[in-house]
Length: 535
Image 1: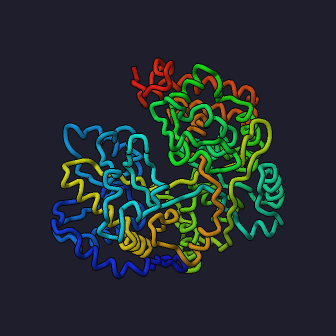
Image 2 (image 1 turned 180 degrees about the vertical axis):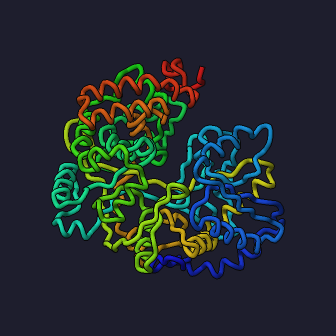
Image 3 (image 1 turned 135 degrees about the vertical axis):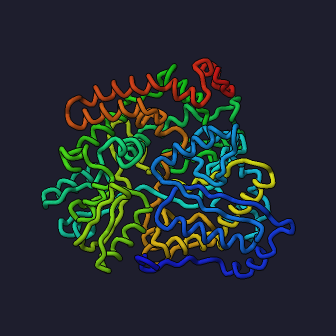
């Protein structure tokens, strides 16, 4: 394989060979028509989907699979526009990243829950049994599952093992230890952190991840305020009737497995009751701790001008010791080390922003989980962003076509289909972005070892634990304002008390717009037990 990942094996269950004869039979009424895959492009992705398409059409000769990938830049706008024009003209696309369409996809995509417990022609059981079904994003109240996720990822810290050994430091477990490690690394002549400080980072990447992770440490008990209560439209006695809050269990508030959330109760507590605050004592602790590290140990005055490519470049050049990314970075690192072995240049970024690096030296890679903060308002140990990804939606068309697209996804998410995808992806120089959630698929070699060393500490992106962490509801005006006053705090222009006041005002100002997008009105807050009407 090109730029080898050293050793990668897709281990498929021994029964797969026997299942081949089952899937070869498929259904007597075979599928006919065209399936168009319109995801965004990345290295190896087109080759991988073509391989899956070829394998599928070998079983269903009357089906045609077209791979029509789009540029990643602007993809969200493209997919939103496709659904916005849905009523006047059905999109050519069949399989898209539905999560990037947001509410524009509502009622316009296939509900996979209608097919989840059907027998699959590509395994010896139901479709739901082929994958980690409990990690799918399913609304159990409405019985809606409109995005299939097939990899699990975690945001974590990566570090240069060679620099850590030279400096004589160990991975930190608390934020205070983290500050101490950064100070020692800087004293040794290295930049401690490779972190982007531009608006994109604060909104959707490194700094935005940290804002959510550490806000979560201060908001765990809020589940007692906004969880579904008896008499609520979304209350499930078999789930909510048994829930007992336990901040020592990082999975205690998993939704909807352990508890259901009533979003109306959240907004009522924030906007009317004042029992939830954006500028809380806990958030002041979080941002006081951020100010101990940023921007001092992340480039100083250059921090806010550093983008994602700059940060990764510094880490690969061994100028910075610690890098924040997700588990998808494992494959990137292994490919980069293989390029160095081969004497090849390493390219960072895409298109006009791409930078070629030469003369890089190999280094060992270590990881550590989010160091927990301590202090006033901190309620539990740190979790991280630990989620299933993929988010494949099927554009709803006629029933026969929908069933064919669902059958294709059943094949893709089977051991045979997904091992075909991964093999072609890696052969073309691509990398897996996470741990496979398809049962019967495992990673081995260095990549498998790296994933096995991850400490799973729980997901902060559940319920509403991080709803007020950044600009409320990802409202762009709120995000821009948050970036501004957060930058002022980190550069010493305002105090943390002033930051908290501005944060409370900002979130309160834009909350009604966010509620409106979710069809929740201020009038709905008067009766949170009722399903919101938006009127």
